[in-house]
Image (cartoon, rainbow, N blue to C red; front, top):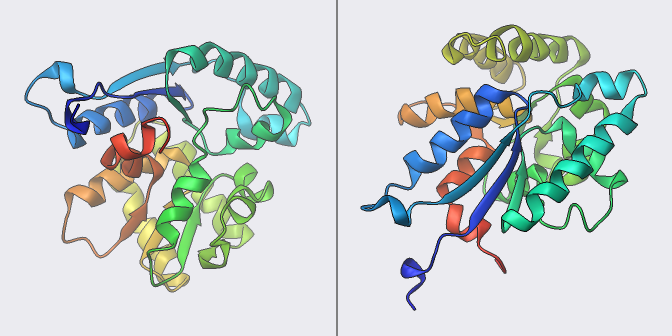
Length: 236
């Protein structure tokens, strides 16, 4: 059977963190993979669970056990339904080391997806993330090419948190975040940023639509959507 004729692999998304960007990711997958017949389109199962414990709050209140139980429970529910699983929140990845290997066996870590792109760039990449992601060193320790990652100072981390929680998660137009992102890129001497919080996928899609944009986003959701079959198919 020709690879193109094989059934689509199934991607499971443990999402709802936040719900809008999880839904937008599903939309991106289908926009990037148009098919003449819908039966040939990518197969996706989204668990959109906004009731997930707050990831940053779990870290800073030392209440990580509640998130661990949530993650393990939902990963086990998704496991028999799909070939690979993507977690719709970067910060939530810190819980993976404390859950069983069986529960996380199908997870595609966002850090590993980003790492492959870091190998291809010729300049540093500014990490835009939550405080929890910075403090847990998720990208610094999860990427072999971590020497290419620039982490902003504490003041700018608070600025980025405001973009995430006051603009993107509030449902405001994603382009409103661009002036601040451009200023930060200028400050840190690069034109590339990493979506270290999945909310920045909303911005990455704008940049992708503007083919002439001088800003480059390394965005795991865009990468998975673009290379869906290569990344999600079992054994790849």
